[in-house]
Length: 258
Image (tube, rainbow, N blue to C red; front, side, top):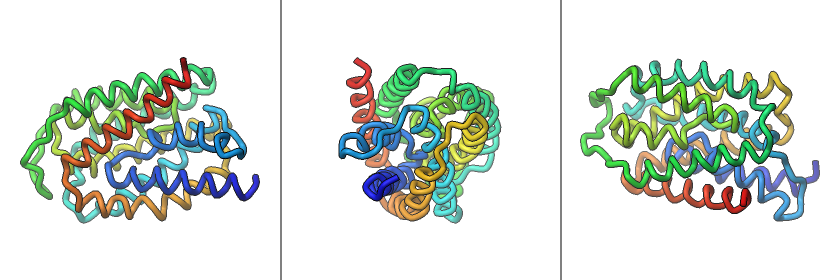
């Protein structure tokens, strides 16, 4: 693995992790297309979709650890929300990631493209609640939240993602969770999901550990900075920023498919 490839991976990791910490996602929605398309674009080693998903699973794990740590004193980590959605998403993510090696590369890109478009629709139609204060009371349908998390884990585990890029818009628009509570809690739920995904990907030999280690270092450096900035930025701005990022990556994936 040459130095140019390492530098490229590090830059990708910094960008994805910073964004993930700021807007409450694991970073795979940004890293998946960048890892797939940027290395060959700059003339370095290319990665397959399965390798990208395996590396992404490791990166999401460490990015969300850093992000959750940054939010630990914010008052926006909702315990019940994390317990109900986290336990459900863990079960489905470990199962889907384990069997993901059976899916073709085009199939994985197709799944990503569909999920990204769904996420964009949710993000552009979601309404931000005003009563978004630290340690504020949040009510939600527990069975609906658990069911949605199970479905999200099932499809996101295939991509090596924690599922936050679809989890966040669903929490905002379907469960009607306040934006900052969504951002902080989704990082914790995504962390739990990533544990299951890593187990499945490593167990089936889909992880390249040296490239993954480069992204880990980038995640530990950039994710806390993004999370810190995210607590200072207007919540509505964060919601639209996430929607635009997802839309851009979705278009890139669909262009590649067709």
